[in-house]
Length: 105
Image (cartoon, rainbow, N blue to C red; front, side, top):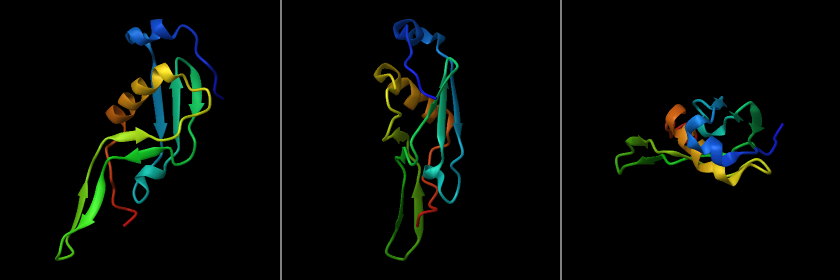
């Protein structure tokens, strides 16, 4: 269910209640399902909406390296309030461990 919120300016004052649910984990940390509940309204995000700021690479001796980075959200639910996107991304980065898990290598 997704719905538009009313009274957004009052909610931005810090009284907003955001609850996250995310089931991504190794070996596909960035391929989980994200659900965000804002003041009781549930927003189901599209599949593969999360993008990690991390990366995986190999040096000349084929030693592997995994760097973590902050999350971004590439695809939002239809009609998601623009005013709440930054707040949700901040919450995602506070609560979901930063990746890259290296599972896609």
